[in-house]
View 1 (cartoon, rainbow, N blue to C red):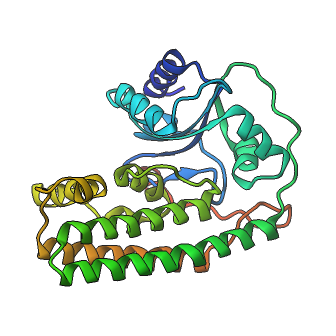
View 2: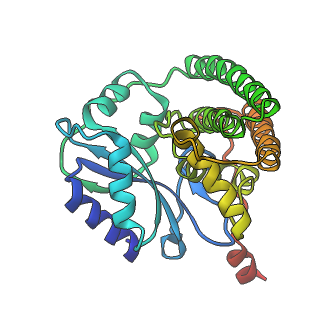
Length: 294
């Protein structure tokens, strides 16, 4: 196992005594992100070069801590070792998902790489109802997309009224909704966080366009994003929270672009649940592999 990944797994097991830890995806500079949710639905052997890992942590049934607390706790303790994004679910909930043919649970069961296992067995998994999964995502997207549009309209109204903090809050709600339905459409997992930075980490492996919307590559961009992130709380509860009209215009443009990316991605998304006859499409090659072949 990758040395840094081993440190993360050891740290997590000591911190929260989970039931299981799965590897779901990985990425490294110059290479296409790999994960179990898009073709070829598997991870290759380049763990040694990976710099970011997507993990699923299965917690004990009696662990009642909110997931957002576990996210913060684990990420703070592990960030010195390697970059990670973590999905979290309790063992009895995940086991029930398996028995009813939940797409996310079945993909993890079939394709996830087990990194730690306390030994509790899973129930026999049921087959996924593909038609029902597609119908549910389509229904969820219609509802979410309508909400995104209304949040943006609300931001426009607040901008006209010079209430720039509340305009930012409405755009935050729009972005949060967009990231949530985007990740759910691809993975089957519904995010339960208001942290935009964390949401972007979940969404970025599936879209380079989404990854580039909030670059945070200079002081101005970093400050803008941090204010946008803070607007979820501070725009409602702090009288001194300030944003400018120019900032709202920029955020509005980016959130509208996010909505478009999500809409286009879901419109062309093929639910690639493997069938024996389906051709496996390989991901783009890693730059390092191309150089070696050259």
